[in-house]
Every structure is written in C-alpha cells, then in structure tokens.
Length: 301
Image (cartoon, rainbow, N blue to C red; front, side, top):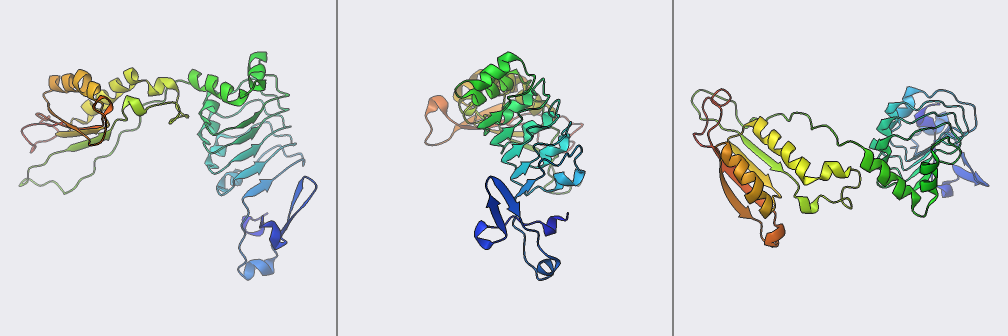
C-alpha cells in the first residue's frame, strides 16, 4: 500500500471515523491523488493479521507519531526502528518478541511503550534513556519478578527506567571533530588554530535536565578527564572554554593547562553568582611545530 494513498485525516473531514475502539481509515482514490489532495496521516495500524516480518520500508515513514503492531506473530524488531524519531506511541503487545534492540533507547520522544504478552526475558539498559516515557506495559513476559514488581509500583515506570539508566555504561567519547578553515593556508601568512568548547558546568549537569544520560556520564570526576584529553588532542593555539565554574578553573583547568605551557585568563560572565559562575577562559602557549609551522609563538586558553 503506497504511503501516498493512506490517509488519517481530521475526523470532521469524513475521511476517518471510529467504530467502538477500532479506528478506521479511508484510502485516497487515484482521482483524489491526481487532484492533489494531501494525506495528513501520522498513525499506522497493522494489527491482528498474523504478520511475522516487517518490511524495511516501514522505517522510512519517519513522520509517524503512533505505530500499532500488536496482536501479530512478530519475533524480532530490527535496530532500524530507531529511525522513527517522531514516535510517541508504540504498541508491540501480544507478539512473539524475545527481546528489544538497544537502539530503542534512541527514540527519545516515546511516551507509551506497550510490550505485554511477549516472550521478553531481559530489557536493554538503553531503555532507561527514554526519559519521556510515562507508560510501560510489561505484564505477560517472563521477566524477573524484581522487574515486574518494580513496574507495578506507584510511579513504577520511572523507577524501573531509573534502575536501567543507572546500570547503563557511560557512552564512548564523541567522534573526532573536523577543523573549519577560515582561509586557505599560504606560506606568506601566519596561521593559528582556535578551539571553542562549552564544557557544561557541573552545577547544570543534573538528572532533571539530562534525564537520558546515566549518572556516570554526568559525573564531573569522569567528564573533566575526558574533556582534558580532548583539549590536549586538538593542540590548539587558542582554547576558549565556556561554563567553567570558579572552582573548576582554579583547581583543575589552570594547573593542568599551565603544565602544558598555556597561560590563562579568567573572565566571569555577568549576572551569575561567583560561586557558580559561567566562565569564558582563554589560554595561550607554544603549539606543536609539526602541526602549525607558521603559528603564533604563544598559546592561549
């Protein structure tokens, strides 16, 4: 069935109607399509028809906000489901699923995830990243009694997600970032490199604000080491850091960067308490001659 021929229009238009709890949809005719009538559907139902396998083209329907695949014979959901980034409601109940792909943790807009009456024995820890999830149905699966009992508690969904998230290992370091060349290098001009980095101060790295991150990934003692490794790796002539707290600057960045030959400038932002201030810093020092043959003679951060 072509995407262009499926319609889920406003109920007052007469193209969609309901009988009891069953939603019914009308397919656009070829004449309507030829006349330029637009389809506005955002929901797709493939229910109770014995489906065992799903077409890869399903994951191309990235406009979907609700997907109903319940009461079928589906035994596997592929990682490509994470391409449906707009999904809010996903019903996979009453199938033959034995597990879920870890990529489901990337579907950060999900609010309803229905998994009851399957064969699921374990939940991926990545499920804990779904910080907007308010409805998680797990009954009828051979999960451990501890998980099922936790899900049955008041606010059980949030408690279970918290357990999964805190068990999740912190993600790997981000990929290498490409340099942006402002001007082509020539032998007649001095060149230098600038690294600008918002490091996210520890005060703002909270579970409330970053509910999709495990606490280990937000911990400052871990982040500061990774941040310093990245700054050292890029070996920039000028390093500008934002959101550096006062204590972080004087007790960590200034000593570490001084050992690398940088000189620092501390510039607090206006309107922020000094104990929790956002800082813009600039250090200078001597760059590696192999990387910057015509560079500044001092580095700054």
